[in-house]
Length: 637
Figure 1 (cartoon, rainbow, N blue to C red):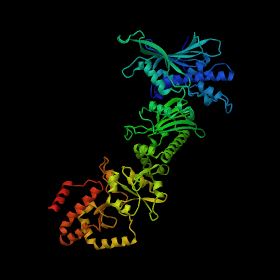
Figure 2: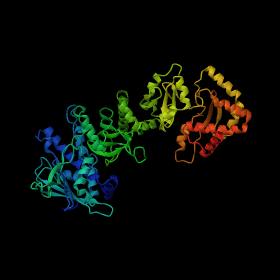
Figure 3: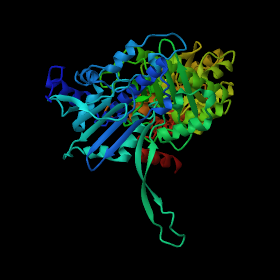
């Protein structure tokens, strides 16, 4: 029996297949099982079309590890291969019998089992050769269905070629035996002979192959003759176990599934001990045909807001997992979503490990984005308490989604935002805020701070509440960046109550404040000079009620944004244009005028104290605490 050379022309091509196409060696088992599934599909289809009397329940794939012989065998009772088919399918690299079979099946119209229904997986004809990543020799015995009873064996040790000869085989189907490589310093090949490793790989990649994947599992049990008062004795035994689930939960009808089914699947699949806050189960046909099962977790993973966190949905093709985390299917603003997508429309690369970035992928990603938004909007409208629970865990990510990309997603995400309302004492959407606006109100007012309580105590808050204006309280670092990126909602601009140009006074109040500022200009100028570059201006304010002073900011950069930016690890520091505002009706203003008239040298000390008080009210640390305390004590003695 002479050795034949591969018809793909070069040894280099097979070496490339083995060493370059596949990222992980463990993929070989997925490929062999997928090929076995394809072979079984072919015989099942033949049985349906030719009334052979075979039922789906008769088919199975069997795995046999043998540690002593260092072999791993994968068998199926599918269609099998003739000698010519062995030559054609295994002797020619990139020759796919599965693809040819799929293309040859006629489209018999609606109601018939089509090529897509048959879920033919292997299309490139290279998956089989992944076996050489872990094997020094591969032996394939095959007996075709409906032949003359003759079986053939294909044997190869790699790129040097192969042999084909007659052999004895009792049953129809294919048996592939891998002679596992010896361990090296870098690789442990014998791990693929461990039953737990094989079971885990099947669960990971081939759990939803439609035929049972079975293996003799070694187990241990208590001996029956052991008495209660005896020392327990155990015995080993073997039991045939089906290792795959076969029917994906996402391909079942929603009416067949309970909340417990969904939650149990989620906890087991995504290693979360808490049930998800929401489940999205979609089956979509049209421009993109796919099934999706997605979950919105109740709590953020411990590493969610770190750079180590990886987003992505599991990607399946015909029930076979292709990617553990396909990041392209999820936008960043929904990176918290867990789940999977199963589609036969995607163009996979030759190794089935990665996607080619085609139009279908983008279509599915857009559809998934819409589905998640729709589910969150439904939760927001109908289950507000549940939505608030979700918001505490992932609201910052939605707000970041608006800020990121210069507001490209603001139109899609803005109605998912909720902020704490001063009037409702609860979370509210921006739309709800706008419907409650006063007739004379022309802006959406917001305030920033570390906590709701600290914002509520701000001097500026007091004035707006006095006029009956509702305020949105923003306590997260990303909040103000988010609303500034939005710019406006329903043609109503966002305006910070800590802005120097708030202008909530009526005409008479403005005229009165302007006159006071003009009269006190020398005093205010001297205070500004004593504070130097720490403030952009010092002015008298008409919006303060009981508080003597406050800090506001002019320009786009607020004091809160300055605080956030300066907390980042960078040498460049941001600086807001701060304005020190003084209450014209507070006794302190009269005291300042008195000092200006009688002891101008002391005015600088008072200006410094008032400025530092205003900083503390805003939740900003004073620049020189010791100096501040010293000056306060000097005034008290």
